Amino acid sequence: MNPGAFNANDADKSDVYLATWGTDALFGSDPSELGKANRYSLDTGGAIADFSTGDHLQFSAKALGGGLSLGTLPESAFVLGSQPQGNQPTFLYANGLLRFDADGVGAKLAIDMLTLKGNPSLEASQISITH
Image (cartoon, rainbow, N blue to C red; front, side, top):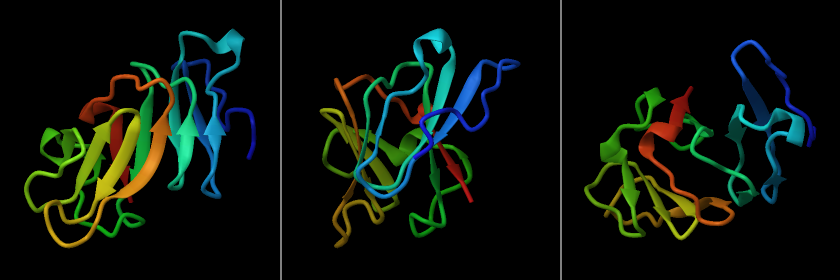
């Protein structure tokens, strides 16, 4: 993992971090970057130690099996809690654990995506879906 931002961008005060291989721990910006928004991209099983209100998560629709619209995650695809509602692809967030359920209340089980250390608040608007 590259410990620094891939796009140290002072113009819009946002950085991008990319981690892979399943057991990543990201710590966001260094102290000189405090107050700047972070974007995180992880495979399943990772952990983010300092996720906060201004930070965003980005997931690939293709990697998740499709069924998700590109852009900001709609409220209807996000549940605060561990039980899916409806039969569409849904992100579930409870006790710091973000999970993804490809078919809602269907036969497929939700998979653990990542842990947000300290159980910070998370909203659908902080999740975006890309190709």
